[in-house]
Structures are given as structure tokens and as C-alpha cells.
Length: 367
Image 1 (cartoon, rainbow, N blue to C red):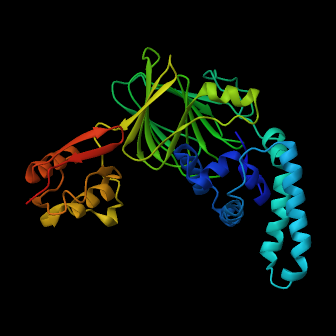
Image 2 (image 1 turned 180 degrees about the vertical axis):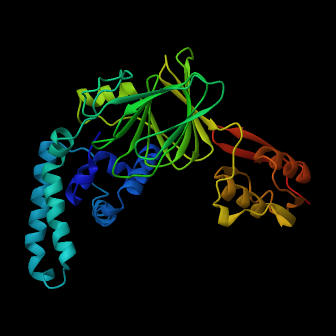
Image 3 (image 1 turned 135 degrees about the horizontal axis):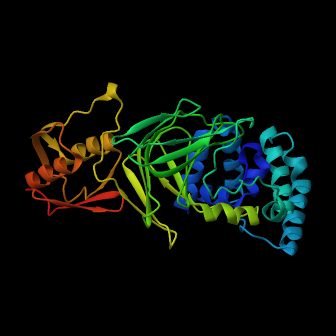
């Protein structure tokens, strides 16, 4: 996986994934860069400058051959030289530097895409065994042999609540650039946020990567599927086979899936296929100080749906024009999200269905 934290403006401009994000044509890359920016706020200024320069290059092709490079470089250089006397006093330092960067990017863009050295992630495919007492950083293994849930503490202050018969393994101390945990069975993780040392859970061929959040992983050896459900924060999941591909090809872009609160991913181990959906019982994600109000008194349907979306973090799709005259009067409170939706839809003569991670409401409108 590429270490973007060391990238400068020129490097970002030459990166294919970054370019797709700036163009806004790839939801997968958009999710990745939003996740990455959250973890690296110190690169915000560099990112913004790179985005501005890419917009100046938006008419350039994504991939160019050697002849096109020579032609483009010659044209840009000639243009700069011919117009330098006219615009020399008008150009700001930023655009002078921008012009130089454009020439460099046109000339060496392909080189960056094909030969830029990146950091690969070590292969992690098996649960480590207990090390002997002479090791500098011993391995710890916790097995829940009780008849109830057991909460294990991790070296960084994070915790994992293990179901009966589940096992978790980890180093006595988290060192290096990652915090790594190996799970067999089912566990609910509450991870302390640390953007400089991401948290990885390896379970039955699936890798879950977070910065600091809470989520559940169900990965029993006998099951054909692994399920990751998010309660708070953002989570990235991908097959461990993707890591192996990145090891063989340093420029390989790992294919991953991003989850937000009340979303879950079911990973089919044999086919290495993901199914994304809402969790069975969505919970309110609003901070305690912002306790949502679900008491509706002749409230326009648009406001009703917005309150639900804010509280649960779930997108509700509906035809605003058709339902513009609909309003709801209902003193709702601690009911589940789906119970609330059932009551609301019955009140206005509508119905809803769940489509992956979205709720779609259908209605003929209100008089």
C-alpha cells in the first residue's frame, strides 16, 4: 500500500488514484481519500494545492506515451517563454511554481506511475503462536472459555469483548506503524483512536483496518462468511489476498470496501465477494449532547427524514416533489429505526424497503 504521507504536490498530481478522486468519477477512490485525509490532517494544504493544479490539467489525458510527453512539454515551455515578457509582472509566485510543476508532471508522470517506490504491507495469513519468555515482545493469546462474554484489554487501551469460545492474539506491545490483532470467533472491538498507528484485525482471510472506532467481527472457523458491522467511525475491509497482490506488485491498488456507522459487510470467503447492507438493528449515532427529538407535530416529511438520517447516519431516498405535502404527527421515542419508519409510512400511506445500505420510501403523495 502506498505511503502517501511522504508525498508532495508533484507526487499527488502524478498519482492515478488521487486523480480519479479529484475528478469525482470513482466512489471507491473518493471513500479512500476521505478516509486518508481524516488520518493525515497535516497534509490538507498540500492536498488542496495539488487539487487546484490538477484542475488546471483537467483536459490532459490520464495516461500519455513518450511522444505525447515530448510534444506537451515543448508546447508548454514555448508558451511560457513566448509569454514571459507580457505576464512576468502579473504572475503570482504560486502560478509560476504551478507552471513549472505542470511541465515536470507532463515529462515524468508515467515514470511516477510505473516506478515510484512504495511501502508494502507484510504478509499476515496465520495466527501467531505463543512466543517463549526470552522474546523481546511476547505474543499474548486470550481465549474466552467462560459461558458469557469476556472483555480483554489490548496494549494501547483498546478493548475487545469476546463471545464464548472466541480467541484473540496480539503482541505484548504494539510497535511499528501498525497495531495488529488476530481473531478467531466473534469479538466487539472498541479501538482507541491513533491516526499514526492504524489498527488491523485479521480474521479468516479478511483484514479490517480502522483508526479509532467501534465495530464487531464475526469470523468462526466453521463459517463460510465473515461479517463486520460498524457501530461508530469508519472501517476499511479487504481480503488478505489483496495484500499478497500488493507485495508482488508495489504499484497495485488494494481493492477495499468502506463502512460507516450502522453498515455491515458480509465477506464470502470462498468467492472473496462482499455484500454490503444495513445492520439488523441500527442504533442512534448522535452524540449524547445532541439527543435527537422524535416527537413530530404536523412536521413536514422532509424534516422527519432528515432527523432520522442525522440520528442514525442512514440515507433515506424519496421523491421530495411527490411527497412535498406530506406531514407527520407522531410522538416517537425509543423505538427501533425500522419501527419508526413503519409508523411514519402508515401515517402518510407510504412504504419503505432496504436496498443495500439505503432506505427507499415510495409514496403516491399526500393531498
